[in-house]
Image 1 (tube, one colour):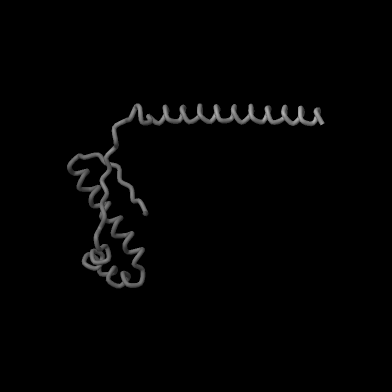
Image 2 (image 1 turned 60 degrees about the vertical axis):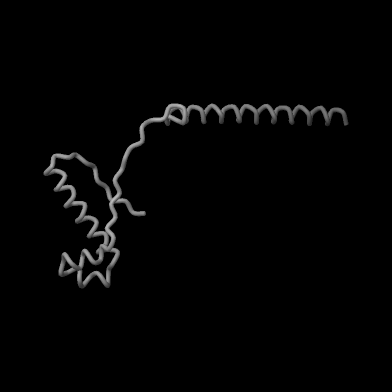
Length: 109
């Protein structure tokens, strides 16, 4: 009986030591990640972004294109996507004329 208890105590001690080591390794990984990402102590400047949303893309499509008048009722998602792509192209042209360098991307949310 004493041997069984001694063996069980050794096993539990080894498991506790292994868990303690795992926790220390996890804390070290978290500290490294915080330092690499410029965490709360060394914050970096926020990067500004401009968000543009067309309030009624279907109405814009109907006003600007004859084919969109027909497609707007049947394929509203496609027409909306095309309106955003065209707005993006026009903004890109205007900004290039003013010699303003931008990167534009269309995000789906």
